[in-house]
Image (tube, rainbow, N blue to C red):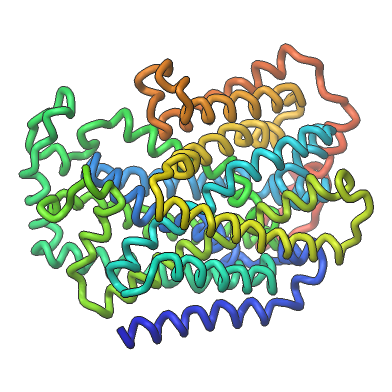
Length: 519
């Protein structure tokens, strides 16, 4: 217990210390929200990765999908690395940095407003973000409850409050730069922690081959359809249900392309080198952390004699797998999950506060707001968002309220479904229209809200799952935006030409970067 407490105190002390150190970088809006657009490649890559993966993935998703799909759940981690990180950086990174700087936009709603020339579009996007990020923020604490109960004799509410306060301190003090530096440290902990945990868990089962052999002996449940009773299915390449597994891969991977807290990491990129290095680093990080989490969860059924899914849910799978680890390794696990949760929490509250301040309050509710006032209001809103998320998390933990958890389940689908296609086409295609954005916003939010309402019973069987429903909304948006754009009024030529002129600006580079051929 002494070792655990010392590690926690050191961890929290470093996080807060970095926040106080970065105060000088958070004196204006650009510095507070984007770190002055001067964040280096490693910090940006780790900020992207740590915002991507939280306790929801490590405890919730790894346990749930590992139990359902066995070792095949690792495909979700591979998808996160290739589609959610590598392709996201390649497709979005450079263009996002160039156009958002040209349009002088610091948030995703502000991008929509300036790119499509619509204040109402900007306000609507900020409202959608506010509605769906709050329950997502509250859910970050859920994964900590069982782990803290296993490792410490401390009330869960106390742990939640302490974590929230300390996260708030370094975000409020140092803004994005403090978040990025802390994300880097937390990312290192996550990398080494997940490797150590995987090794320890597999070693407890006799090693990788022995664990895989044990997993192959477990037959699928009688309710598993065509594969019911089949042995070896949980150790197979695609698992018992490849169609629904594909939905998991799409939602958790393609979803990052439309999540404001993820995309805004590209706004802060410092240079071309940062893009190239960030692409490689974030992909490797996702492969190790996400791939490791789902790979670990895939062996959950080896502990089925200790797990009662009906009584305790899927969140009990990973904690049960870890319960037999040495005390020092348990301390590492707690720090790992704290790192994952605090990094994502800091990113979410910074995104929420900046969006609400710059896109909703500034110029609409408060007509005149200087730089100092904007930063002050964002700091106040960070306190508000963290307080709301703490209250929601404690209410959910101590009562039978399930609506919050359900709403969190659709938040990724609603946000990414609404924003992915308009943002992607907005960066690449001059023909994307304001009307098409509206249709994408309305379609995805309506469908995902219906998924937690009584209307859900009328959904096709494949879309009853929020995972599949969210994946459907993302893919539908990619079709809706071009189709609606082709049949609606064309965007104003001057507005579009001005937005895309940033890509035509000439730059001079060294020959180490290009041969400089006359062609």
